[in-house]
Image (cartoon, rainbow, N blue to C red; front, top):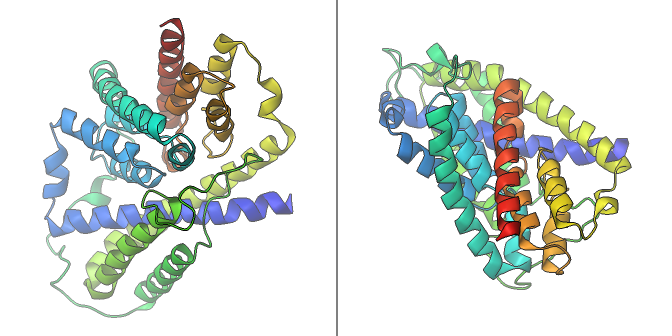
Length: 350
């Protein structure tokens, strides 16, 4: 149990930190543009979905966290959220690029095209009853909102956020928060001795750079922005629920995966394997899905099984969504599951 907790804690810190940084960047851009950021997304369904699908296709969970943050603030539609969740394969993208680079690029391209179509159809069919994720007045622009005008003091809130952000950047740079998600599946290391800009390590460096930008804003912004937008809105409202739900979910999943061996269910029945891959994809965690990548690379399972797994699963990207809205999480995962089955079985027949 202690091992499971110690493995879940850095993952929860990483996920929460990345989501919070994304939210802070959205707040900065929204205030800097005087609300034009939110207005630029209104009524642009296709471009919302296209952008969300593109962010989802970026290897790792960073793009997924960005889309969840935008959905949380009511900037993108539910269809855009679904598009991201179909396009992303989470951290498994890194493994696929290392083990099956040529097939991985084609799979990612196919998922991108599929996600755009699925997102458009979702928005056409799905009519939300309400918008519980919209931050409302917390995301509104006030008369005294400005990043550069007003009083600036270095109080305890700014100091605490500054120290926490510096610590998070150092943890990213030194790789102390890298995902532990193999669950018994050996992960290959591509381009040993070289530079792989699509590796998880370089993604962490890039995100550390974005965090430095947020740190610069935090050090120079005026008190109103720091207190109202960063502290009260993001730190007090969003951070606790995101961390607690993420940490708790990872612990529960860790316990379940410790006592459940997915490889025991593997057989040569393609139809059953597609169903299993789509069902395992419902788990909001990176790790269990790696077995399907490994088996495909070894020639044990065919392409339809891997496609179903990639469509259904989204790594850690959906965990912040679970913290914000259980209904939205369940609905989005159900749509992904059904699309994964449809594509998997259609590909099998072809």
